[in-house]
Image 1: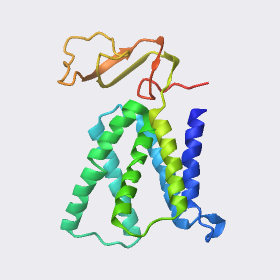
Image 2 (image 1 turned 60 degrees about the horizontal axis):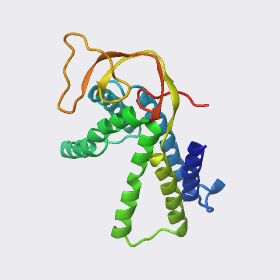
Image 3 (image 1 turned 60 degrees about the vertical axis):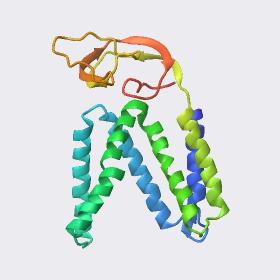
Image 4 (image 1 turned 90 degrees about the vertical axis):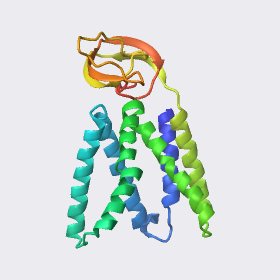
Length: 230
């Protein structure tokens, strides 16, 4: 029920923000483009969550290569010219720091740990910082519907981020490989000879088995908690 409320709040805020009575159906073609982008981003988040336990660097290299080739293909079809080498280098540096590189690795780490919904909610708070800066920088202030939609979206995002989830749940037999610690409730396995030791953060990576178990504790939809709910 709480998830439905959070989704309804965020959806309502988007509808208010996108409403434009001067356009057919009350929404502009530009808003439709943004909404379609969000739908595709949501699909990407859920697909990425399924492979978040793999090597993050290799995963992002493959995704980045595929995205770059697709983007170049679209640009070629549209007749766009390739920018100069200095411009390409600057764009690549900004992309590495701001979106396509480090940010994407951290994003995949969050998908692995807290699931796609909460990760998306946390990332969705970034426009609030952009809005704050733009309000300080520019004199063209938005109308009242903008502030109403921001308030509703902020409430929905806060509910999603702070929601506490706990109930009895079942873990089936599972064998996989990912970085993990041994001070949680799920990694009490034995180690074979030659298993790499923990690093300074107490983590290491190797193939391990989770025995089937039932227990009850607060959790998020991470790698070990992707069960259904009645």
